[in-house]
Length: 83
Image 1 (cartoon, rainbow, N blue to C red):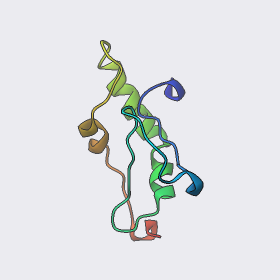
Image 2 (spheres, rainbow, N blue to C red):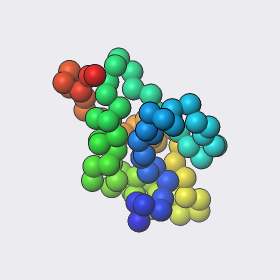
Image 3 (tube, one colour):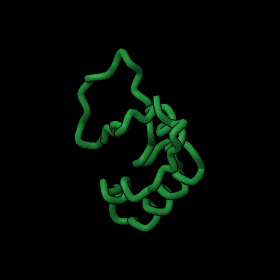
């Protein structure tokens, strides 16, 4: 189910940085020099996938999530997660 639903995370390779996004995409930019690959891996973990699936199941009329929903998911980052 996750492969075809909202909330799916992708990692943009360096050669595509600066490419256009559409209204259905959100670009997350790490703050404080956190490595985007670490954040990406958290967004591929079962806890995140279940979080998104639960949101989608709870909204049967329209399959979407809000930015507030997205940012409510907490990613535990350690000092080792920095670049």
